Image (tube, rainbow, N blue to C red; front, top):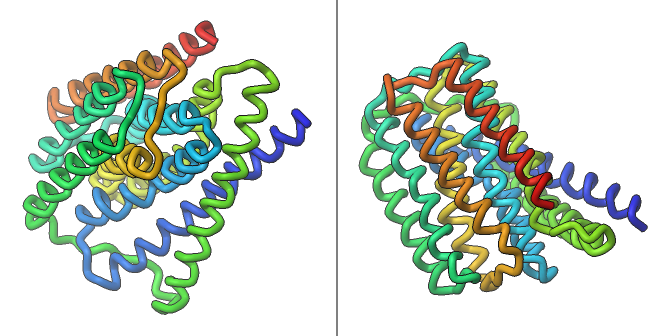
Amino acid sequence: MFWIDVVLVIVGLALVVKASQLAVGSLLWLSEEFGLTEFTTSFLVIGIASVLPELALGLAAAFEGASDFGIGIVFGANILDLTLVLGIVAIYANGLKVESKTVRDNLYFLLLSALPVALVWDGELTRFDGVVLLAAFFVYVLWLARERKGFTRKIAASRDTDLPDQLVIAVFSIVVLFGGAYLAAHAATSISVGLGVPVLFLGLVLALGTCLPELSFSLQALAEKHPELGLGDIVGNVVTDCTFTLGVLALVRPISISDGGVLSVGVSMLLAALLAVWFMRSGASLSRREGVVLVLAYAGFVLAQVFLV
């Protein structure tokens, strides 16, 4: 049964990643259809769409009675985005300039990662905590709406399909997404019980798979000379995960924390956010050397988790 569960986790995660890519493609098409700017699409549409894997896996884990797995996915994905993904992007780009004042100011919203850590400190994330997190996300959206006027370049997407086709693709991708998430969460819970490994640790491991779309999208954006789109995807993903994703999870089903490691992982996420903001605010750029430091920081986090298991 162990190897069957391993295969089910891999299949479920693959379905989650592929379905989320289809969803992002549909949302990009709809962004052009409704005339959204690159900035708005990056921080809102892509930011929300790219957290679908974490949201789906978190909800599936909550209904499986494995809330620590869902928290591990969300916190782990944010740590990955702020260190490994951002570091690889900086190295690939030979340094990443943060030229826009609006984008630089937006980096401070990464500090919202402190909010879920503070709320979960008492061992649970209640429905009231969920309301607080969603309120923080609403404030973030209002700020984006106010600042978006300075960004007028529109998104260009493929026009080889029409609106009904895109709606069908979007609905299909959501169904597959949540089906794959349930499959992965159920199998991961079985593996955790069988091996005696904390389900939180498995969540941190699987978070690597959920971050592949962000890495791919950001590298593609850089290749196409759209650095703000790539950076916006990463920042928007982290902020949305810390507020919207965890807020929805708490509202649907309050989360009780059974693994004390959740707090240490949350603190690691906050430290990663502080490091990323410090690097990108200093000199209005993220140098290749700083990118290497971020990658090494992630390696250190992984080693620490392995020794703590």
